[in-house]
Amino acid sequence: MLKSHNCGELNKRHIGTKVNLAGWVDRRRDHGGLIFIDIRDREGVVQVVFNPEISKQCHEVANEMRNEYVVRVSGEVTLRPPGTENPKLPTGEIEVIAQNADILNPSKTPPFYINEEVEVEESLRLKYRYLDLRRARMQKNLLLRHQAVKFMRDFLSAKGFIEVETPILIKSTPEGARDYLVPSRLNPGKFYALPQSPQQLKQLLMVAGVEKYFQIARCFRDEDTRADRQPEFTQLDLEMSFIEEDDILNLVEELFISMIETIKPDLRVIKPFTRLTYSEAIERYGTDRPDLRFSLEIGDLSDIVARSDFSVFRSAIAKGDKVKGICAPGCASYTRSQLDELNKMAQGLGAEGLVTIPLGTAGSSLDDLSAEMVRSVASRFLTLDQIKQIAGRLGANMGDLLLIIAGELKLVNKVLGELRCEMGHRLNLANPNLLTFAHIGNFPLLRWDEEAKRWEPEHHPFTAPWDEDIPLLDTAPEKVRGKHYDVVCNGCEIGGGSIRIHTAELQRKVFRLLGYSDEETEERFGHMFEAFQYGAPPHGGIALGLDRIVMILAGEETIREVIAFPKTQEAADLIFNAPSPITEEQLTELHLRLRED
Ligand code: ASP
Image (cartoon, rainbow, N blue to C red; front, side, top):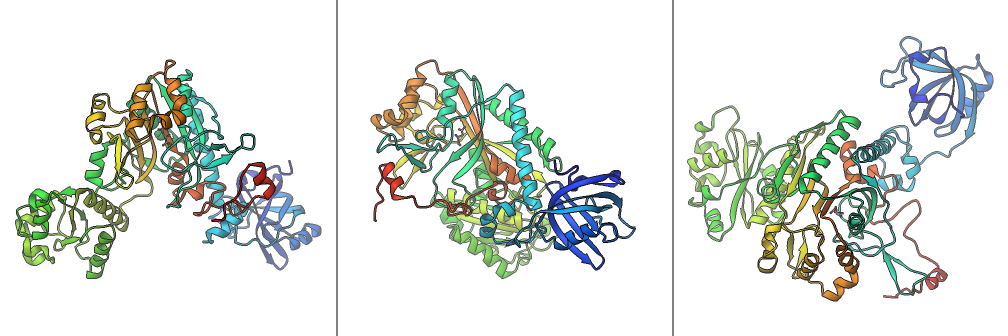
């Protein structure tokens, strides 16, 4: 190798050692006689001193060196002179006195600084991703991702899972998005679909007797550009035979806890994971992916305000709507404009309005609350006793601000769920070093799509209904619960799975309910029905979004920060300029003609 040591590994123990280093020029400082060059490799940065009295040749080479040049240096590690140590640098106590140096490859001036964490426009970063990835933060993210994947592989292998690769050129495996299609040259007019997940393939592996499968699997979903989605992303996909829901959930819990304790011990995981039903999550947090790092739970106030003089509340309840609220601790002093802002936010989310009740000033007791202390229209229509009851229900104290919404239950939950997150973040209640996982279960099997006027699977069409709910498939599909579970962490959905249907009969019935004709079902999923007739074991599994998990562990805000070569929000790759046009010849080979319109 061109190097004997990594730059970042050198310290006092190496004093007196002769080292060969190779890397990139991170920074160059010319102090008249002496030139100092920080050399960087993957492990970090070390300062090299070029002294013309020690080697004139070296000093001349150093004179030519510029940022991002690839260089090789040999020299001796010495203690830095007292007062010149750099405590911010792990190698800051030592420096290398250069004896030999050469430039292996010069570099153009990069389009952005690589040696410091400055904000750089994302499209520039993506166009020069190979330079962006050279930055310390990205190197750290790549390493963390590697460690996570390695941990998952080792953990599951030790539990008897085997990794099986499944094809990318396949047929539609629906997960609710559009398929990416690949035209077949050898089969004119026919197309492959890229898998939205290996769902059907992993189920077929269970029929094949694999019993415990996993894969670090690439999935492809052609979705409209939505926040933080990628057209291709990676799942830790797994499937097991002869199991129940808890077996999967316990496995996932053990995997996450041991992984984080091993690769990210500075983060704190709350153990055991919280378990919530879907309806509990919606009722208490307004969402099925609650951020549990803070409480600020939503409370139902309908019974308290039903008999009040507040007509907005009373008439809402008379209509069958609900009145619910949350408490924003310490926010009673919010100004008019701050309250207006929250009101606007609630209206933007579809609420008619937001009722705000500030509770006096902190320190005193709720018992002492008087009407004058409540600066709110509500105090005109609610009795002091009613306000105290509401405060009690929401766990509020003096100095807090109550936020109340009336309306249709679903909407009220949604708006309060958003307000809860907003307040949690404003008040810095979401500790970034805390990981609060939850398993969410008891989802409905189906959801009514009002636009398309048909049932959609809450998860995917292969999810089994609860055994005791199967008769309801014919009579009250909305009441059927699915054996589906999600895993959430800090407000992000990071995975989902289910126990599967494993008989052709029940699978056919569910497809019929979803509005597929028998012919269509046969054409698209005939292979599954066929397979289910050859001794399909009961089975189930889960898929965990690797990008999102690493994003959370890395403390990043988007999954693009933990994917080596992500696409833009417009699904483009800026290095390769993909997607791009193809030649007439290629189109002809693929039996395709482009439409004009
Ligand atoms: N295939 C599912 C998904 O991608 C996960 C599963 O049910 O195992 O969400």
